Amino acid sequence: MAMTRHRVLVAGATGYLGGFVAREFKSRGHLVRALARTPYKLNHINGELDEIVKGEITDPESIRSICDGIDVVFSSIGITRQKDGMTFRDVDYQGNLNLLEIAKKAGLKKFIYVSVFDGPNLLHLDIVKAHEDFVAALKASGMNYAIVRPTGYFSDMGEFFDMAGKGRVYLVGPGNNKVNPIHGADLAVTCVDAMEGQRQEIDVGGPEILTFREIAALALQAQGKRVRITSVPLWLTRLIVSVAKFFNRHEGELLAFLTTAMTSQVVAPVTGSHTLKAFYEDCALRATKQ
Image 1 (tube, rainbow, N blue to C red):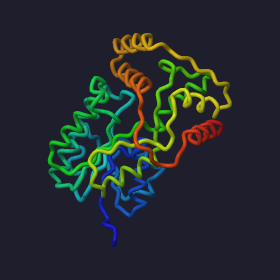
Image 2 (tube, rainbow, N blue to C red):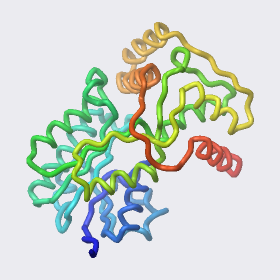
Image 3 (cartoon, rainbow, N blue to C red):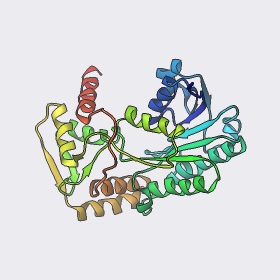
Image 4 (cartoon, rainbow, N blue to C red):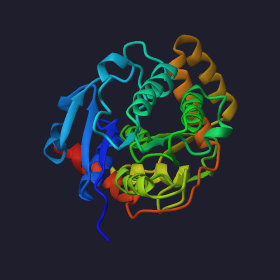
């Protein structure tokens, strides 16, 4: 049976996951239009895309025709570091809502969205609530959808690599809770599979289930560092989060999210083949070439 060739809009193509997803769609023969706020950031995959359109989902006028001629939308758009005073609510919720409204008017077949693992139970966190409020809007829209909920990207594990580069990794509590983070290439397979599949809510993690202490050790070993890991008491971390929120709510909320992750079991069905050890070794190799 011949594969149906879809015209796909990838929103968030300049992010860690989006680039992998764009490549995966193309590898399966689909036509890919990438939405980018800063198109030059796609120069490394420009030749793999059919079209790049400049626009900002927080500015509906700039994307009013973004879905013309498109069948399916994929969005992994969200912010981590604060830019232009934008909040999680402005981007993760309202920005994606703007895109959804345009997709509905264009009569698209499906909207694939990347949220957060265990999101419905983490609504006290601003970043998760923004994601999940959009999920609620997507479910109520009447459009066919798929919600992908990864445990965490390998790029998120870069925080441990950066700490390790300074010789010591700090953990919240003993670091015995487990997580199975996933590489962007492995997650992209799940995201593209969701276009053809019938599942509407997909929890997904990587192939290895590790404790946060094991992750810290891998990050240190990849850089030839002695294993130096310090456990910060939860009460002290909560105090630091409160102070951080007072001075910068956005950064404080990011720290609160990290604290919650490190004090929870973040394990989803396993998939993929990329290991965190290989990822850290690649990061270390690239660092030596800079």
